[in-house]
Image (cartoon, rainbow, N blue to C red; front, side):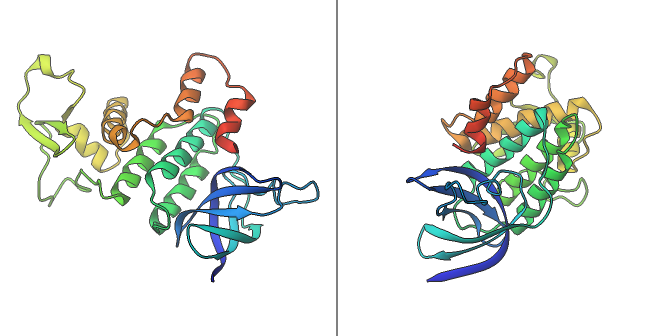
Length: 255
């Protein structure tokens, strides 16, 4: 029986299991995403239920073989990341992406560090969109979808600032050269200078952020398939001035 002791972790999702336990999806640097059984934590005398929450830095131990292992130890390794408002919904969004896109037991230590850094940055009164775009970009790079050169120089396929590029799902970014004005509104078309800003994570203007959001959505949509992201629904309700109720947030936190 395999046993792993004292590894950093975050809870991505949890759901009731049998009468007194939880099934908890966790994200760790060395073993990636996987599911543990947290036995007995729903009993009244258990003090672990409060620890097994999203955005809480944990140290965990587990043992077992196969897809489902048993949680044997849990403790905090730092302060809870306190996210509020749209920043809270953004944290849920990160969790949903990791739940859907990461294969179980596939380690991503660099992505784990970036996830933790992003949660720290999201402890703000106002959501800054650039944090989401940077996380999406790095997640895609970890999954092998690094479609943009990291630097504008010495890139094998140079993206030119004065050219336009079309995103084709099967081929990535394809140059279309000079572009007529009526084509500039095409949702799959991107200006070279904006792509270079995205490549270098230069989020200085709203035009770059808008292009990045559009590009990430084009790439992520087929990867997500028909799955509906609860966090996007919460963002939409927030943008319309209505507040999601506790049951909706509970879907992302626990159930």
